[in-house]
Length: 239
Image (cartoon, rainbow, N blue to C red; front, side, top):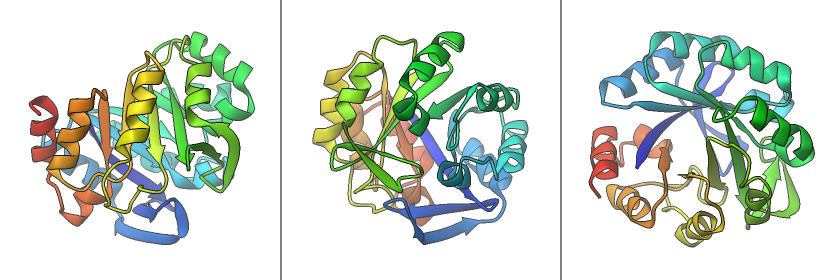
């Protein structure tokens, strides 16, 4: 199972939000490049980046920070937040990002997203952020009526790189992942699923590895020190 340490960017700083709430922000650093380098030195091969400002406003406010991180490390980097159209995809991939996570635009413009998946096969990830099982959009500020599993199935035959499934209730809370919801997602589609939200301990990582997810995103637990990246990677390889 791949381990994806997370760097969430807001105003150029590395932050974490509790349950996606911008009013419950904790700043963990002002140098994303240094944090990414530390992750790489601890054995990370993958890095999950989120432009929180772009997710909320649709504008890539942290693009310089993203470019700096990608240039400085050799990890496979993916970025989510504010990827809305072909121009965004072209510009962001030109920075050297390996793949992009698309959430809101996939829900609002499904025909465009399906076509984009075929234009950039294996480079787009469907980001499904769920609040009580329903897809949330616009930086989690709005919640649709569409079940996350339904949306996953809608695109399961597209050439996606993966699905990132985030349970908002557990994200940034260090309460453990929502295992039943993740299992349901894995069983619903043939696409590789990356779980995000709630990981606190090595046992959480081990549990995710044993249910068959392709990857696990870890954020706050690394910054708070409830788990080490080296331990997470070791368990991901040998649960």
